[in-house]
Length: 341
Image 1 (cartoon, rainbow, N blue to C red):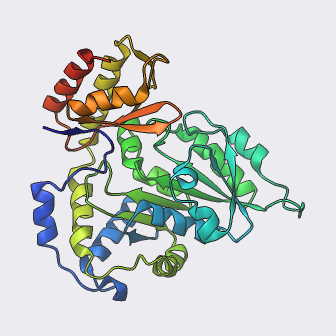
Image 2 (image 1 turned 45 degrees about the vertical axis):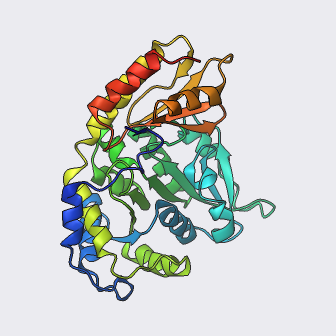
């Protein structure tokens, strides 16, 4: 039995989700005629209290569309040095929107309002880029599933308003944060100009993300999605998976969080583990001791049919998810205790 902890994107649709997909009513979404896509978009917009939303094939494309909406070429986006929009979207901010990034040295992917204030360029100084956007990621991927303090996000919002800056949330795993912190979707909908939400991570859909914003922003996003090659036809079959995920897979995220915490506790008790980052949601970041070869450790687990990932900089990652059961958890902990390096 293979146990895959590389990511929460590796899940397969449940029986109920597959049934919902097969029963979906579909049309041509390029002509805005797919009823299931329309239902998903309206459901998400209502959930977050936003005017509109748009279904995308990926979170990267949704984020890149948001950046394009909020910026002009030669302007600048403020984000954390570990942000997904900077590190893991292929340089898209530079290629698609022609902007540069002011990278903040945050804590586990989270920065402070004071750091934002210092990073905003003087708009009268024509030697430097105009700052136009602040991008936040919640939960933080490279930060180990860390959740932002909502009061800090509110403070950053006020600074954005004072400086005429747009405010985007890469909420790929936002539902993990909502469950962990007992927060609501509307809290975030009221705070950010645009929000991207991934349906294919913890929620377990096979594909798809949604971008939320105003009607005018989403009208622009439709054109940008077309430009990026993201317009789809009878995509209601996939949108139905997203609807099912929203209806059935949000509350159960707490199970993933609890299993990740148990893994973290087990790792903390092992002599060859140097550090385990605090575990808040479903991502577990840890480091082996200097005398232990990182690749040897990963390969030793692979030989036991347990797959984990290396994120560079010595970071090792495990991600719990819909397909990771209690039995698998016990198996992994047992193999960690008995591993030979």
